[in-house]
Length: 324
Image 1 (tube, rainbow, N blue to C red):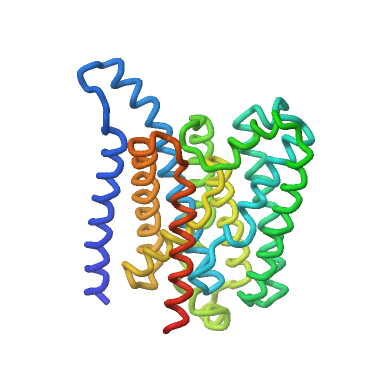
Image 2: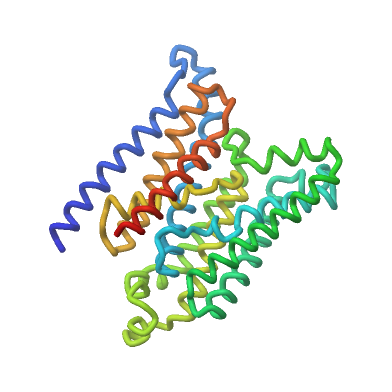
């Protein structure tokens, strides 16, 4: 065990170094150091985007690991259960019924708070009811999640078809993950909310290693299993809501970084898994954004690369599980 921990510590150090290299590369590439004003301007532009990507990496990375451990399945993430479709439906409904010039749509902070509250309430209610009703049966949860994704998507599609074209153009920019226009006030609010969640759920997070043993074993060890699961699910949905509301839906990011962390570290200890997932998230997002900005000149959003790569990785995981 000590040998495995030592190896994992070294892997975490290497991943941290790679993350720092990506951070420095993103901040310093093509920066004019000879002109002080241009240097300050570049940092003002890249600083908020860097903060948004780091926050997104930690929120989605931690939420995906916790969610997989709660339902005891490593190929499922919250985005597969309708979270992204719910986000697009909320934004479409706001623009459709209130207009793009309404206070909720125009004010970034109010829009962020609305997204977090509605997604948190809806997803928490759905997940809690599903897990209780199906007795944590993953197949039923996935089935209902697929139906919900289709249901939310159908309503959103119907609204966009009868929406004013000018309103739709305004809406479209919020439905694709975007790190180019980040409100610094939203970043501060996101950090505060994530810190509050980590503090409020510190006891449940410390029990994750025990919860993965199963309900009966956890109860025998003195854990209030149902209460802990409900609180963790609330934390997961709020983390995903924060990340999605801040930058837009990024399908498969959680699947990629969570499973890369599990495959690299090969441990049951969630301290390593969560940190590894977050570091992988930083590497993937920053590396992808560097390619988007300096290779494709912003012509292709980073969400496209993550969705395509995540889809292929998901197929690989399914085939490899079948062969085992």
